[in-house]
Length: 409
Image 1 (tube, rainbow, N blue to C red):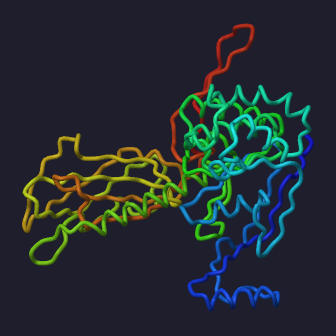
Image 2: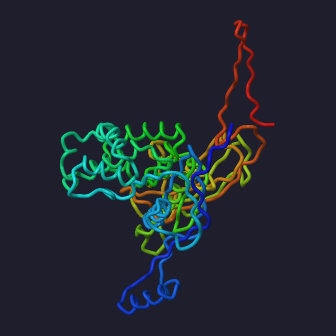
Image 3: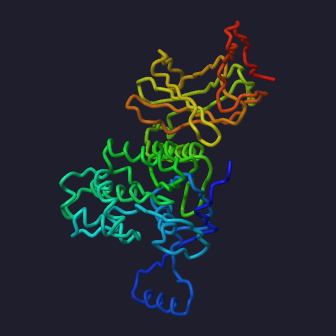
């Protein structure tokens, strides 16, 4: 299969913005620019970003607000120029970056369709041939004849996306377009994007929705503080990004819990032991034991989670529905254990976390984590062990041959 042509290549791209707080700094900026020098005070919005995109590929750009996502998309779209690095772009680009960008607020929807198509280089005959198709895709009814300034945000996005679909660019860049459309319009957009990618189009999608990232994109880039934190398959990068937010939220929740004992000692899980100690054999028995303490008169609820080393959540369980009885010991302490008869994890490194919650559902301050390794030889891939058996029979209907798949070798 022939390799598809490369549409985009970024090499160590960076973008700086001048930081100005006083008039004297504005004068200094002008002087620096006249001398061909970089501003003496600047904010680095993007730094050392390298990536490539070929025809038919889809790339998601994810990250927190202020991570540099929009700056990167604007550089690719040609709206702004990079401070450092090179951008090699082949083919026609259509960018849906900011709500209503490129539309004149006083013009009607039809007039803005003609304006946008003209700016993209279409002739009057080509515009006339595409106009009905664009209006039908936007599906905003009689509003198409009204000024854009009277449109809702969703209607503006409908019109902008409709223009992009009719022109079928080589590279489509979208920034949270699907976040403001209704469900039926989102389905229409997703169906069009999938068809567009199958036809050789390329997509750069910026989104906070990991559902859309995993559904529409094969690869993803996670930007953090203007730099590439991680690049790879959409599944791997989005899972790592979600794990990052889980850890961030857990730290935030823990920092706001103020439950403590009069003697200054905190409530929660005090100690954690693994049995056996790492490593654990694939399919072997595994247990976790520890001590929990609480000043609340109600029994605490224990939560246990198992994550991959990269933070991907694999399993979680709560003692809420287990009928666990609270047997308070000395100084409001109680021991606990969690037993797993056959650990279904494939070889790799994992982390187990145990926390306690009080009767109000708040996480108690003391939370314990421990890492462990699962060892063993296996021909299976992934994270979990799933007992299975293959079956095969001939077309003539002979008795099927059957054999259990060897889990360990």
